[in-house]
Amino acid sequence: MKKMKVIVAVFAVLSMFYNGRAQDVKVEKTDTLGNGQVRKTIKVEIKNAEDLQNLVKAIGGNVQVMNKSIVNQPKIQVKKVSPEDRPMESNNGKQLWAKSYLNRAAPQLKVEKWLTEVPDTEGKFVLIDFWGPSCSPCRKSIPDLNRFSKQFKDKLVVIGVSLNKEEQVRAMKEPVIEYYSAIDTKKEYIGKFEIKGYPHAILLDTRGIVRWEGNPVLSGHELTAEVIENLITKYDYEDGGVQRAWAKPFLGEKAPELPVKEWFPKEPNVKGKFVLRDFFSFMCGPCRKAIPKLNEWSKKFADELIVVGCAKDGINRLRQIEPKIEYYLASEPEGKIWNTMELHVLSYVQLIDPKGIVRWEGLCTDLTTKKIQEIIAKYK
Image (cartoon, rainbow, N blue to C red; front, side, top):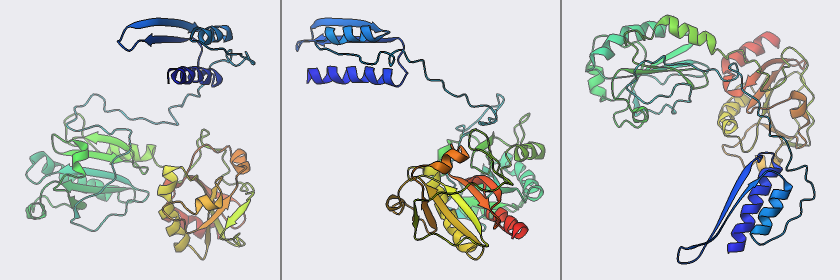
């Protein structure tokens, strides 16, 4: 067992060299007796192949380094992400009475009961206000929330979530709530925010990332129409678009050829049709989340649009994915189109018109039913 542990340690060091990560590695081996006494301690600083050989000899073994250039490899260069690739907001020192989710994905919205119809948030910013009818500052913010709901109705969905019972919320007659409303008395959703003071609001962009948070009526840090408008402008992904860290842009150009090794259930006839290519992977979490939306589009636009899931995985594996894929599958294991498109992000889509021209490209999460309808109407 002792020899096995030594061998594992040496392989770990060798692995670090092979991957170009170990430059000045310090290794310490302590050999102990059963009574806790230390028999021997070896300390070696490894900078080259000779040092590695000396370490192995010291622990009772032998090693030959055939390719000494391995241990002299330079450190791996890590590409820095530019601010444009990873936009960030700041709370500017304001006090929070809740857990911060700024610049992070908000928990999935699941409430106990809707007191209004369920809102359609696809492609919309979402403003969620946590409140209670007995809270004076909460009631004070309602007129502003009503105005936001009307002013930004095409871009923003406003939702009030209360921890109070339904009858308590409905008993409050003034001010009148003119936006979507729900309750969460068991705090299964509200509890994730660890709120210690109400009201508390979060503004999510269309990708579900929190871009503003806090008390919407806190002096000096109020949530205003100007703040909302600036954030909507900054994080508007409706028209897609490609960051160069993601892929090579093809918008307005001929779509690259898709070399397919295997189709399922068969190769579709795309003549006179729009084609939506979704580039995905079996192991990709966001890709799986996109499947229900792609299934829906495949059915809704069946007469005009063909949806194709493009992956390097084999068809047999892709057929096992959950949720089940109900559109065409194309297996391209060599990844030639990935190289052509310089593709580095999934789930990534291209919407191609009947002439083969790319009319929309970007993350699948940013494409909406409305946008597909607009493109079909314009280019059919």
